[in-house]
Image (cartoon, rainbow, N blue to C red; front, side, top):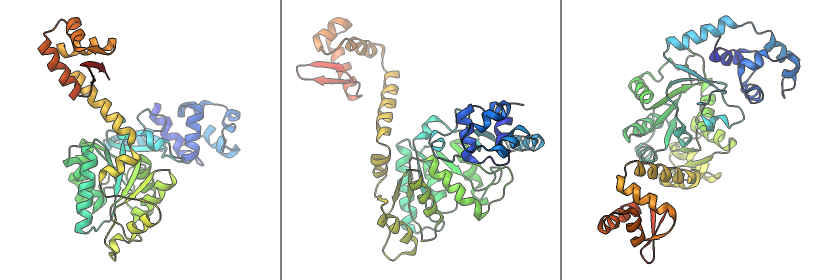
Length: 363
């Protein structure tokens, strides 16, 4: 029995839902420890009563667990549980994160900078255009686009993120081995190559309307903000927006044409306090101000890696503090013209600051 076995087994224990699963993992750190701990210690966890503690101690569903693990392997998928370091950090922070995620593709640390973009399954030309622009601009910024791979806006957002060379995550309302809608088969495989397809439903679970609210809860949970592009008054996208609000996420809505049935839901969101969205920067400025710092640091790291040896030498000299160009030249033992050129390049790359009097300081 390995780590995955115990993680799945804990989710199979009668009476253990997402909330209790999280409490147990936070308390004992590992699912295996949960099964090996004493009855008394289990009872010390909030929400664990005698019946649930007994169910854990008397667990006898090993065959079902092995069957599920085998099905996952046959589907060429993976399993992530709450105790795994690669579990999405944004999703972990909600009160009831899925105890198990079935995954195809890869979830990376960069996916903490994620924004959900959702909307109508039958969008207007205006809605399609808005979804294209927003998804493209966010993906170009390096932000992961999260959506539900449904027809319409969802599919447009995934495709545009991929076209922009970005990452995208699709959350399914069915087993990860089932492609729904079927016409998205090519998209499904492209997402796996450049992001991840995930589900919290067991293998072979068919798509059903009762599954989609749970899918929408995960979409918002994975994201730092949710953008609703176009939605009627009964759109599932509004459910995603409600989950987002309850999870403390910012909700954005693209304003629609007055009188359009496809825009009644989004316009109502704006009336009720959602942020009106005109450009992708509206999302970045409100939801991801820390992302700009992250991106700047990342870009500086890339620049440093590509510096010439002489440029690295000059940068090292400047670690001593603010220096006049003559002092930089003397300490680096380089030609003054070369030093002047290097300093200009370093300044343009944001690695140093040029102070009055030809004095330079490392940022």
